[in-house]
Image (cartoon, rainbow over all chains, first blue to last red; front, side, top):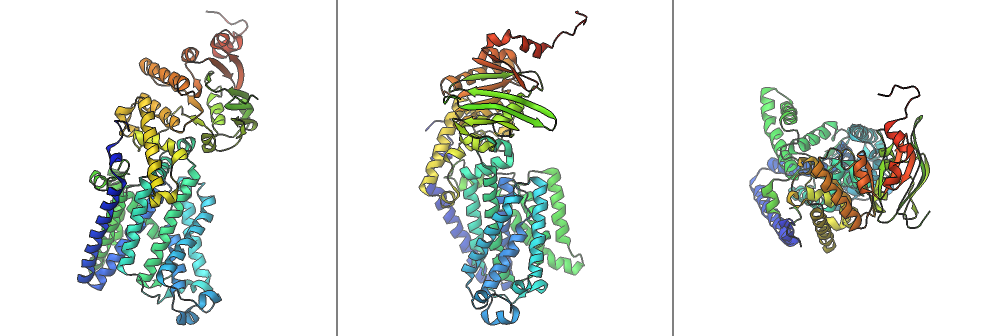
Length: 344
Length: 263
């Protein structure tokens, strides 16, 4: 190999992998300690935090790496949430709550894992169908189109009452999501996004983000690359949505709204579009912030204060550090730590 | 026409509303050819270029690459068949490093598919290694080694032009189309560029089409020159033939109006 090749190439692929596995093990141990020592409320909060991190990182895969300005995450979360909830819903209660379900759904009750997987697969199909027209749009047009997707899915959920029980939503969904499900999803999403980012495919995505025409002329099928990013994002959004409804045990057409899309985009923008570390830190930080502010909001009567803080910090970031806290890269010490990858 | 032609563009025309930007343009770029395309401002050079690379679709006419009809196909398909290009207004992946920019060019040839990437099976690491090795070679060839980890957007203008060529080379082209590669370069940078183009043409045996404003550069560099004026091909031949062609002189200097006062 030539003398100018980056030194990271010399590291064995295994060293990066073992560092990652060790890190996951250490964090998992911390989670286990937290779980046995914390209250049920804090345990749920931690699970929520993990799911939020998974959502922000998966949106970063779609929006940050390939430069799609998609707001479609809540739509896929709604699809995933309903799909999984209908599958896991207790059979004896289906006849009361959902009397109009088709035979094969009404008489079956599925475990969480296959239900979540089915939710993800349904989202993949929807994302491909929606992606064909929508991914030909650029920038703001794509944002508006995916915003429309949220509205369409919400209306579908409201009006397709035989399946979804309409506007009143489904309640009493079994509380199957444990902290480990949420943790597992977070690890999966981070691992997938990291692997994609530091690969030829990821570079093709970033090339598409940086300059679509030049990417196209360098042989990158920008449509296909965008589709891969969009579908991966939708898959993870649906799984996150499915796990979340099994944590809060209720879903209505408005559970995952445009506001959530805004919050997720804010996490990505503040963290830095394309930066996995940034998305993780900001998603975790904002979740903790909004939960710790909640009692204060109640005692002071300042409801929505956390939203104001989020919006203000977005404005400040856009003014003073438009590329986000971490830019589009990962901090040097994190890359060193997980080295053993190209340019790692 | 000939099976030797890498690019065989036949009578391509492109209209924008009422304006005929390129009118009945033809090009046979042979293996190892070095052709210049010149013409005054607004002659349709860049449009012709965009037609040849699939960025624009021709209103009529056909484009064949190595005997395969690729008329109206998108740029990445033409790139796959060996047509690489640079841009008049530089288009790099500014936020990526020099090496990463070049590596992007290797994606379509060697990039691992999604599943291999996610599972990181051995074939993934092999393809990453191939891309890294080849890109490093190309970076050396284009003399960008010292800047390999620099952010592309931070490079000087001349280095950015060379990086664009490097990225184009990473697609392993049979034909390289350069859109005003010397625009904005100083004399010494232009000399380096000319040497690089010669090296690409002679050592790598890549057919080159250079669109240029600078007539002198084209005349010194190219073996064959085409002259475009108002969208039409007005002359084609060796530099010497073209230089003495009346239509070319007219295109560049205009005709003397009857009765005009000669200063």
